[in-house]
Amino acid sequence: MRLLLAITTALVLAALAVGITGCDALDPWQRADKKVAVLASDVALRAEHEDVNYFKGLTPSRERVPELIELIAASGIATNYAEHLNVESDTDATLVYDQDENVTAFTIQLSLQDGDPRVDQIIVGERTKAVTGQRRAAPKPDMSTETTANASVALAISSGRPNAGTWQSALIRYTNTSNRVEWVSQPLESGVIIIYATGEPVSKWASEPAAQAGAVRLAPLDSTYRAVQFRAPGPGNYLLYGYANGVPSPTIPLHAVARGSE
Image 1 (cartoon, helix red, strand yellow):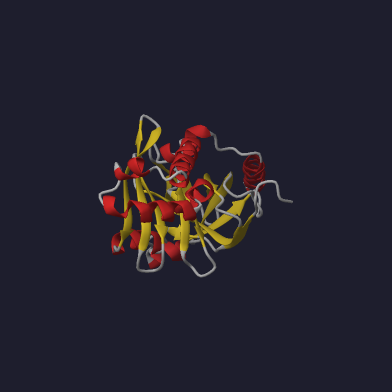
Image 2: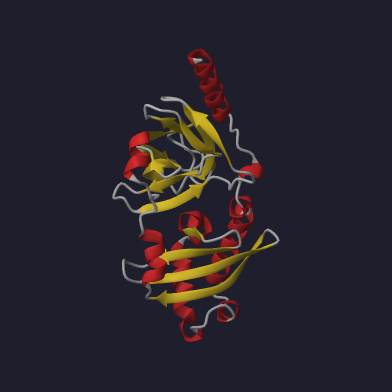
């Protein structure tokens, strides 16, 4: 049994190294990433060329359009959009650019229509706890003491120094640490979360929702796995941790480098 488990684990890790998660496992916003990149570049270009009419048609604060254009031009949205994207549902997301802890410089509300992203509205200088709170609230999953005591979660990634902005694979391992057989939901409800060293969240990537849910029988110290895709943020040092069925893993370092760097 242990030999079979060891062989299975080795095969799973080997598959992870070559990228086992295909496009079908991506959520709608992940699949539309290239189109979002084009959209972000278009918004940046319009700000650079001071396309006043374009922004007047998208913001209710028409008198603040010159200010908005300056904010967008200085934001670097064309290259850092991924770090500021909050996915709210399969069809709605928001690009949030903070000026400081109390003021949101601007937010761009997006929607997906048949897989194509579009800008619905741009809000400039909105003082709101709802938006900043959404990004700053710690996204750690809820867990009970009993669940935490009966299971452990570990996270493995194929590279600790990925290129910024590229898709990476993570492997979530959920282990039954109790002294009895446990039934665990399948596939695992899992994901990965990227944070700064200060603990502030950067982004959260959840596994694809299950079409059909089930359960697997885990004997003591047996494990089950699930692969999750995430995108490395802009160049810099971060911490990464995973979660499965409400149990978090320890953090591991993540150093994203600029594309083309050694």
